[in-house]
Length: 178
Image (tube, rainbow, N blue to C red; front, side, top):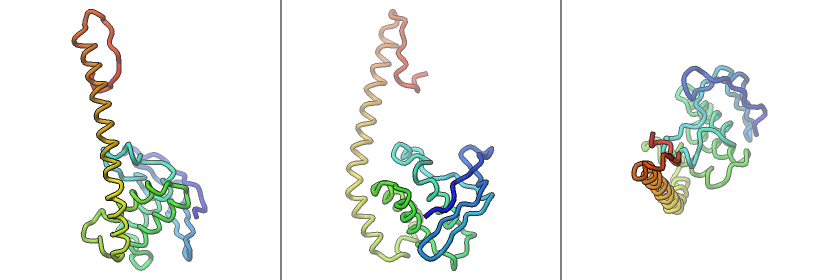
């Protein structure tokens, strides 16, 4: 459970933040403290998936804690990468993040390095792969639906703007037409 609020200051680098107050998390047996001055970009999400997982949200504190614990300069005897990933998932559950989003984000951090896949045992990996097989068709369907809707809106905008210039009206349906 997090014992402190997340207090940050935006840096000049776009998307990066610096802690103004230590972020403390009390685990089952340990107290973890992210120090003042730690720099983070909250959640590292490829732009294509930002519709599913924005850079910040209910899970932001968990992301900052995970960033700190999984950096190379945190001693491995303090917490292993596997334990840091598990703590990430647990802290998201405590913050009220939905089960689907929690597991997707955990899979992203757990499998970010292919050589580390089996270092936590095979059970988490098999569970994650089963979840991935369940979620993939849903995510693909939503992505295709969004693509179809945006393509349809672009076509309407194109027809109204290009084919009917006598109207002298330009509906601003899609931002990338400019």
